Amino acid sequence: MPQGFEETTVDQIAVGAGISRRAFFRYFDSKPDVLRAEFDTEVATIRALLDPVPAGLPIMEAVRQAVLAANHYQAADVPELRGRMSLIGSVPGLIASAAVHDDAWERAISDFVARRTGQPAGSPYPLAVGRATLAACRAAYDRWVVHADADLSVYLDAALRALAAGFADDVLTAEPRGESGPRGGAGEIK
Image (tube, rainbow, N blue to C red):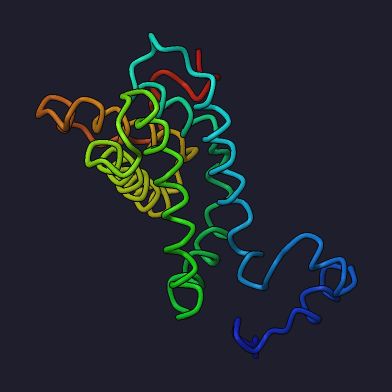
């Protein structure tokens, strides 16, 4: 019978990974950080991609391109991610730490919007863009996990294009599916 997250020790994780306890703490500050390491890397990647964006690129297009470039999940990753997200959503300590990570993700977007618009980072528009972008990405992720028919970028691209279009009626008429592939691709920011 498998034991739960709370009952699993850092020593057990280290042994399973073939490293020492000391080595574990060189890579992670805590046990919950093991589950969120990829998400932290994603936030850092989004920030790095948004820093040099040229002024001529529309804000939401820059955000869309950065988010697509930072995500590398494929349909084959769904089972592992389902397990990880189920764990994060069911252990009280992990639920609380998820909020901290989500806030960092939102701030990566809202800080960029604040710089581009000349508004303080805590202003309503930068915050609204950061939060709305995270919400659109969560919706895309949730739908992707259900279908597992394509890379996550297909769903992220569709959700972020709809957000950028202000959720106009003509954008919301067709649900994205993996068979058609992403519109615009997940390439580099231009």
